Length: 184
Length: 141
Picture 1: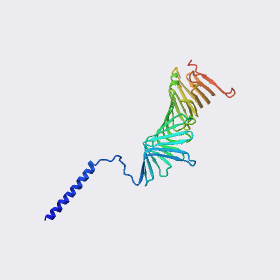
Picture 2: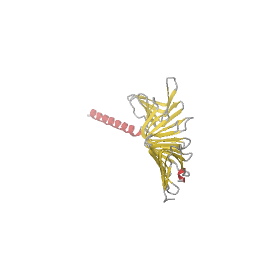
Picture 3: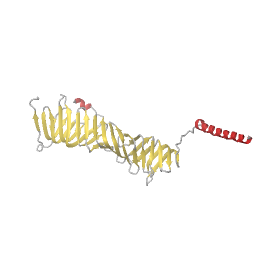
Picture 4: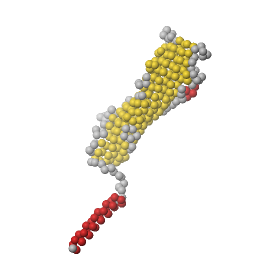
C-alpha cells in the first residue's frame, strides 16, 4: 500500500514539474536578441558586400546588405535592406529597398517592395525613379515591372503604369497611362 | 491666353519611352498636351526636354488637333499633319493641310508659322507650293 502511494506522489510531482516548465518556457523565458525566422537548411551572412566581376575582372555590380539568408531548398537568397549598384562605363545605377531576392541561377534580383533607383553620371542629368515589384535581369541589364512608376529629373516629373527599363541604353518605357509635368 | 505661357506643361500618353541619354521622350501611341488653355492631341509625339523643362515637341497625326483660347475669349482651332512646338521661340510650325479657324475666319495653307505670343500667322515655305488662303468673316470685324 505504502509503495503505491509513493508511486502516485512521484507521478503527481512529475506532472507538476512538466507543467511548470512549460509555463516558464512560454511566458517567462528571456527572448533571444535576434528573432531568426525558422528557416530550412541553408546559411545566413551578416554585414555582406558581394562584388560581381566579368571575364576581364571588372567589377560589374556590388551588393551591400546588413544580412542575407540563403535557402538551400529553393536556392533563393533573401537580402535585407539591400543596396545594389550596377556599375556602367557612363555611370552607376543604385537600387535601394527593404528587401531583395536573388533567384536560383543568380540571374535576377527581385525587389517586391518599394525600390528607389538613382542614376549618377557626368553626361546625363540626375534621375530618381521609384517603383515596386521590379525584376532586374543581371545579364541583360534590364528591369521590368507591372507596378506604378515615378520618375523625377530636373524640371520633369513623370508617372505611369508598368515599365521596361534598359539600364545600358538608359531608356525607360512607360507601358500605360503616362502622365508628365514639365516645369515652365 | 497670355497666362498660358507661364503654365506648366502636362503631357499624357498611353505608352512612351523616355531616353535619358538623349533627353527625349517618344510617344508612338500618341499624346495629349495641356498648357493652360492650349490643348494639342496627336497620334505621335517626340518631346525634347533638357535643362529643366521642354525644349520642343514634334507631333504628327492625321491630323494633329490644337486649340487655344485667345485673349478676347475667342477659341482658335488649328489642324495640321505636323505640328512643331518650339518653346523658346513661343512659336508653332505647322505643316501639311494646315487650317487655322477662329472667329475672324479660316486660314489654310501647306506651311504656316503661328506665333503664340502675338498670334501672328505667317506663311512659310517656297512660293510655288504655298497656297495660302485667308477667309475673313465680315460679320466679325
